[in-house]
Length: 106
Image 1 (cartoon, rainbow, N blue to C red):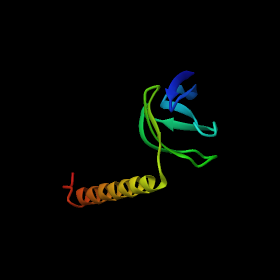
Image 2: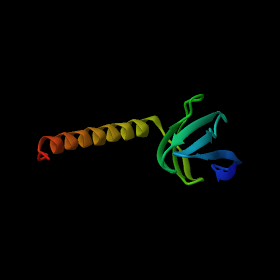
Image 3: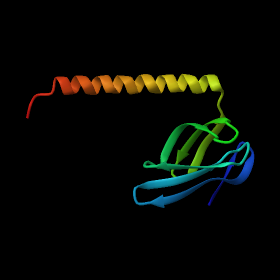
Image 4: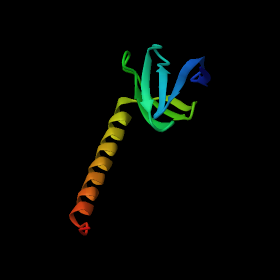
């Protein structure tokens, strides 16, 4: 287990297990202490985290086994980020469709 000081907490907030295709991260909510398991192919993650139990939102950054950032995130900022991510995904799909349309045969 890895101990991190985040938001004044000195407890096991983040643990990791390594397996063949990636890592399993166990996050303990700083507010209610409920545990969530995330499987990541890349040991780096930056983005929102919502506790399944208390529904609190946090902005987190994980690099390897180190928690670099954990701060509360409000609902409005969370929605903005979702909209941006959806727009980026839509743009990537459009680009892929255009590439497929104009790809030269074999």
